[in-house]
Amino acid sequence: LLRDMPVRWSSTSFMLNRALELRTIVNMFIFELKEDEPDKKRKASLAKMLIGDDEWVRVERVRELFQLADEAQQMFSAERYPTLYNAMPAMLSLLAAWERRRASPKYVDFTAALDAAILKLRKHIDKIRTAAPRVSAYWVSMVLHPEYKLSRRFHKFWAELAPDLEQRMENLFRKRYEELHKQASTPSSTVQLQTGGRRLLDEFSDDEDSLPGVVPSASAEPYKTEYRAWLDAKHELTKDMPLVRMWGVHHVLTTQYPTWASLARDYLPVMGSSVSSERAFSGGGLVITDHRGSLKGDVVEALQSIKCALRNDLLVRAPMPSSVLEAELMVEDTDDEDGSEIGKEAEGEEWFIEIVSDEDELEEVEEETVSNV
Picture (cartoon, rainbow, N blue to C red):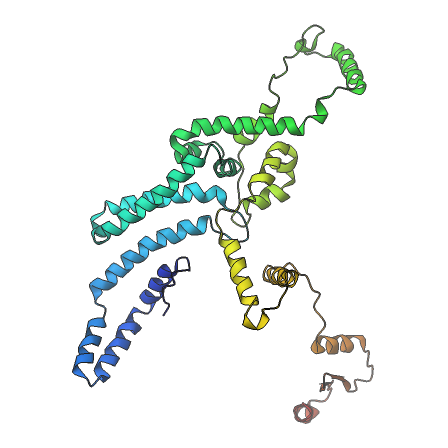
């Protein structure tokens, strides 16, 4: 059985899950304690501890309510990759799920608890909505996600704030675009020569719009080409590909949408929760104990970095050949033409390879091999 821990997320949900898995054993354990208890008063107390079927039903319903919260938490509390783009969708989805169950007669026993939970969740959602114009990471990270962008889902999550956030997104993109294209905005003589040559080649074109005097209208806002290209395109994000990795390793995205990729590098690394930092502090507490109170800061930092690298398979080590592998390599390299015994001693053990041509000798060879081993 697991116990509830006030400082551990979802510990109540874990406790109820384990209790439901072991419900038969739990009741059997309490029943046997009651039957073996000679004292009548303590026996009556143990009888009250038996969990009835109606109580197990309520445990299952509580477990379902907590499971919803745990799923929402997992959406934006990852340790190895940022998930801030899921913060608002997870909270609003959890709010909708709890409100739906609040109106159901099935959960009438938990009305007060659901009211308190909904009130608390609304408080956090209102904080995010209020800070959205100032804290752009919440909605920029969603626009960078292939499933959200500025679609109807984005407008559904941000409601009346969506039009303002959409305009802010365009202004932010235009500013970044202008910063990245400052150096390219200065014309050169080479560009002018290429333009003149192009004008001459257009004389041979069959396109009437390319005739001298017919100049195609240039976009007054060149940033909109790339801006709309990402928003209008359809991309898919696989389950095994975190969003930040998609923008980091996908060559097509970084070359076709350089301004969007620049925004992705700035906004996507923002963590959606403090899980990673809290685990780092917890790991540091396991290193700095009463017996290691004199460790300096650089040593603790090095130990934490090595632990993180080992846990995430960031240290690549070539495996050393084992004694068995060495013996096999020796056998392969040895060409014994007369079929005699080949022996090699490896780490204190003798390895024998017998090549037997006579079936009558097989039993003797097996007995000898066993005795040698």
